[in-house]
Image (cartoon, rainbow, N blue to C red):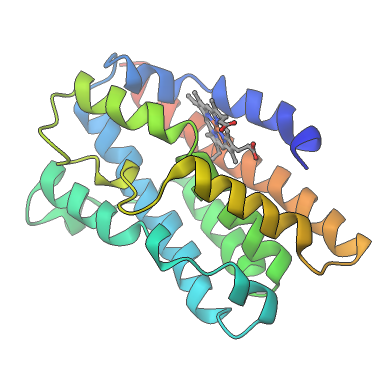
Length: 205
Ligand code: HEM
C-alpha cells in the first residue's frame, strides 16, 4: 500500500498550502479556515466510527484516543471566539470529501479504514512537524489553537507500528485489499483537492 500511494503522498506534500502555513506566509484566517474544514471532515469520519462500530473489522480499528473533533472545536473556540460555529463554511472540495466519506466510510470496513489511515496516520506523521511549526508562526500559546495536532496519551511511532500490524493482518480478500488501496488513493486526492482550494482562496491575496 505504501508503494502504491507514495506518489499520492508526494503530491499532497507539494500542495504548498501547508508549507505556507508552516512558514507563516498566510494570514491567521487561512489556518482558521483549514481548522474549519477539518471540522467537517472529522465530523463525517468520526460519526462513521459510531455507525460502523459493530462491524467486526472496524471493531479492531476503533481508537477513542484518536478522536479529533473535541480538539478541533477547542481550537475553533480559541481562533474565532465563542461564536466559532458562525464561521464554519465548507468549501466545495470539503463537501465532495464529506460526501465520499458518507458513501464509503459509513458503509464498508475497507472504506472506513482507508480514510481513517490517511487522516490519522498522516496527522501522526507530517502533522507532528506541522503543528509546532504553525504554533510558532502564529504565536499560539501552549496548546491553544493547535490541539488538533496533539494526541494525548499516544506515542506516534509505537501507534503507527501497531496500526501497520493491524493493516497487515486485516482479514481481507484480495479484492478487499485492492478496494482499500484504491480508497487510500482516493482519500489522498480528496485531501489534495481541499488543500488546493484553500491555496486558491488564501494564497493569492
Ligand atoms: C506539508 C505536508 C506534509 C508533510 C511535510 C508530510 C510529511 C510526512 C512524513 C515525514 C511522513 C513519514 C513519517 C514516517 O515514516 O513515520 C509522512 C507520512 C504520511 N503522511 Fe504526510 N506529510 C504531509 C502531508 C500529508 C497529507 C496532506 C496527507 C493526507 C491527508 C498525509 C498523509 C500521510 C500518511 C497517511 C502517512 C503515512 C505513510 C505510511 O504509511 O508510512 N501527509 N508524512
